[in-house]
Image (cartoon, rainbow, N blue to C red; front, side):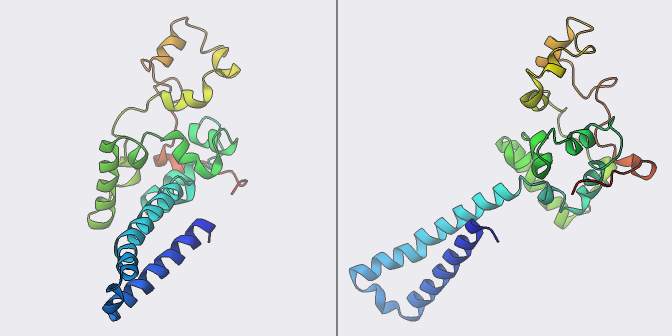
Length: 210
């Protein structure tokens, strides 16, 4: 258990204990000090616990383990271990081009709870679909919007392999088009093999890593 989680649990335990005292002995709220304690117990501490809980869970939800804890996402996690450098997600994960423990979040920072209010509502819809309906099979899962080159350029812009790569410089209009998001990094003929969960039965897997 992490230190923030331990503090949160202690705060919750303290809040519950003090709330029990207030309800069992309401007379303690007669004095000025008792009223202050009741306010802290019934309003301030619950709000503080909720804020700490949300903050802790948002931070935990950035982890690769959290993303892949959903049964529907398991095949996407398997693609990270495909022994084929043409698979974009696998190459980035295995070579630590993205942090291995935050691989999903690094490439999908604009998605669901980390994006706009609209994306957060989509995240709530995902929860509803997962728990109250039948989720679609992994091979049917698609991004709501085309992948934005911005997520690639966070890391690759300015890198020698990107700026001076032979393919990127074969056409003088290509790099400007990539930067303007007019030519997608994952478009056909470029880095178009990303997860491809439908091919898992026909690929080899890398035995290294965690």
